[in-house]
Image (cartoon, rainbow, N blue to C red; front, side, top):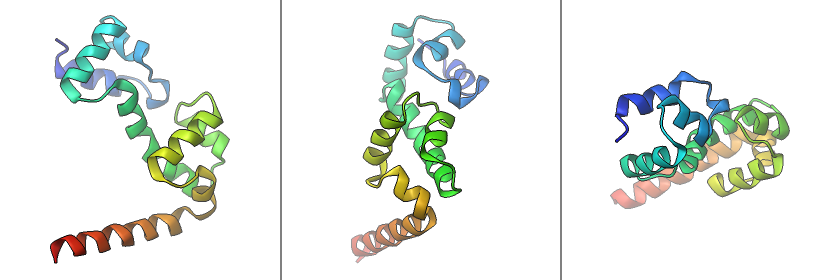
Length: 123
């Protein structure tokens, strides 16, 4: 079993942007299959689900600062702008281009909706 300390070491020993299953497994040092199976057992997520969850808020922040979609995709570790755009849209329900153009406006609108939903639940 992977010790949690080794997982933490693997997470933070290298730049996020270099992460992939093989690289994380090498950090532990165990096989990709064993790392993948144990990661899922410990976290309930696949490695790629976790990486996507980690990368998307970073991508949003870069887009909201005005970085291009292509440069953002590259910065958060995607080899394809198309794959990044698909993952971003799936994660947030808005396109990366929309966030680049109106990042703060969209974020504030989503926070208002979330707050309104919480108020409804509390009532």
